[in-house]
Length: 234
Ligand code: UDP
Image (cartoon, rainbow, N blue to C red; front, top):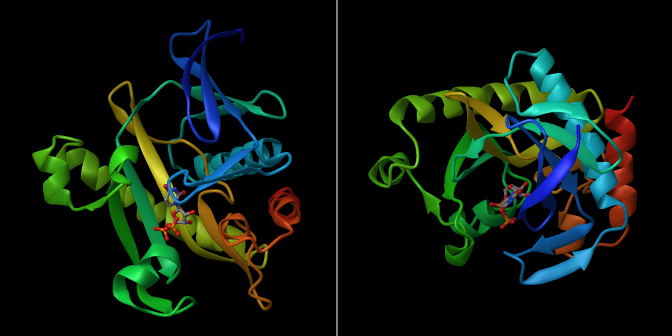
């Protein structure tokens, strides 16, 4: 598949057109940002690790019946994906309290939630991706009721699948963020799933194997991503 014009550059990825109108190449960069890009840095070979981790997880989810934009891994940093129109929502699922939920509700990090939660955030950098509810989604026509239902159904199914997937690797899936897109009228999972977009805690030690190492300057960032890659590649 020939790489053509660059159509988008985000914080962690670049999208290129290809010679197929239905496909894009998603290129993973080493750039790391946190706190809505207030903190910037580089994680050596993050792009390579996230491309491989994401490819592995998308393959697993596809096999389990979740439609995704993943077609194939093309190279160390490149993934061939279906060209979707992104639904401007970040869908966040939590199993254990961490990050912004602790601030929002004044609860301790690490508290296991009595049930998994789902939050919608409006993908709008200049507003800091504010949390919104389904009424806002309808009012702004970000997605139809049917799309919202599909997104929620896929999201909870993905949570169950990923919890099991990571548990088998001795990793606790604390929380994660998903993005969906529309492809030929269907809602499918898009973007990436990686230590940039998930909180992953090692069972037993509680070691953080995700971007919190960067956010909080905990050190050994590359090693943590490498450890996740090694485990998902088993
Ligand atoms: N997350 C993400 N992109 C965002 C915001 C959050 O991938 O723009 C992920 C984050 O890595 C974590 C989960 O979503 O796994 C929940 O994040 P939280 O709301 O706690 O955000 P924080 O304020 O900690 O970034």
